[in-house]
Image (cartoon, rainbow, N blue to C red; front, side, top):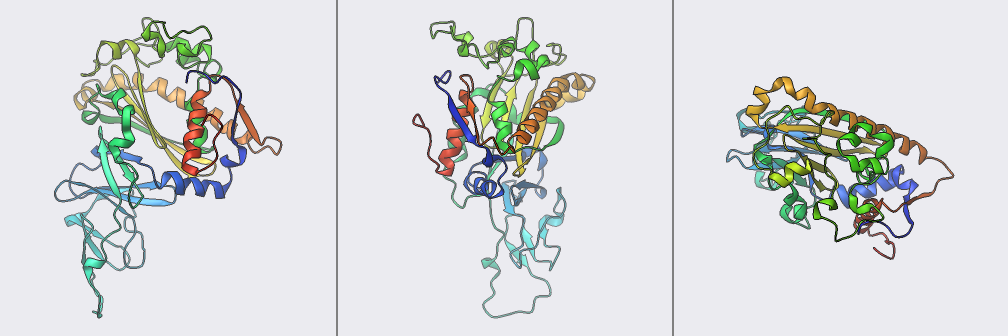
Length: 382
């Protein structure tokens, strides 16, 4: 689909603030889909760990003694106490110890000891391992799935989106800057804003100077009324402007090019890979940026933004990093402001539902994706 050929309704306004509906989305989407929670570089050694939040759930991510990625619910099998009280750290002696009654587990989740417990008939440690969570990685990004039996493998979930960044050495890069922003809006509003550029001419003047087609309120040339399939293939998708090297405020790169991207990648200046509901990754000729979406409540969302470089480049060009960060920071702040304005307006008693205009076809796709997972009726085209 290029553009919508007729007006389509948005999702009901209440879906963006109703607490019961938010819980429904957690169950149908966030607790069943693959969700990105971090990077392998956060757990470089056996026993390193961090704790990730997904809705109301807390998950421990670590490496076992065989260097395998492991994840568990942050809950002791005894009476349900929280195990890890710090957001990250290292399990001393390769043991996960409950701070309440000292039940002790191995890094692969096996119950090893129950100090001071008076022995009782029928108790077997093998019956009480930690609650496991499916965890695996792609390109250095760690994904978990809270379902007992995920409907897809991670490879199936990633699909063709992962191919967009196949030329980038994602696993070899390291985050050189991470910034977390709390937005007073529903998580879906961020994805809706991400999926259209109708707002770009007014909201993102700096970005429009780097990607000129955004000045027209569209995401790619194919959204123009006069676009034809016979036009040059390179006109099918947005590209940076003439003389622009990368996404920086002045369009100039002060960093060496990454190994991997080919001439077409460099000419485009950007490649996006989107992994609903939790992550998108953007590859540029000289750096990579990712944004993780973390729902905190019906009207509260965290954005976790990382910028990535090869380790040697980060060390040798530390004075150039601020230039790399500036445009991304500006765009996140601008998007955050309008998402919060959107959230506020949806509380109007008069506004039950909005409409989508022609170039908001990716929003329509997103809404259909959401409805399918909620088992909700879709439009006639869905």
